[in-house]
Amino acid sequence: MTANPILLQKKYSRVIECFAKQQGLSLDAALGFFYHSQVYQLMRDGVSDMHCMSDAYLTEELEQEYAEKNAGYQGRKESDLWIQTK
Image (tube, one colour):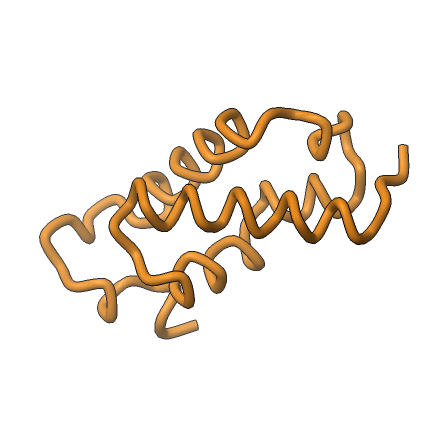
């Protein structure tokens, strides 16, 4: 299913903002991570209607992906994470 591009952009922004708040990241860092995430790719491509899921669900999925990708980086500054060096 194809989503309306404007509505999809608004959905992205809500998920990114929620993710940034919950992880204590800057909006720039959260945005960078989001656009390199599997969650974004699935939403963008309309796989399993991911874009139809709630903002809370998508944020939770993004947090899980973030935790997996940054395992072993606990205690480091945001600038040390892969999202800043990629």
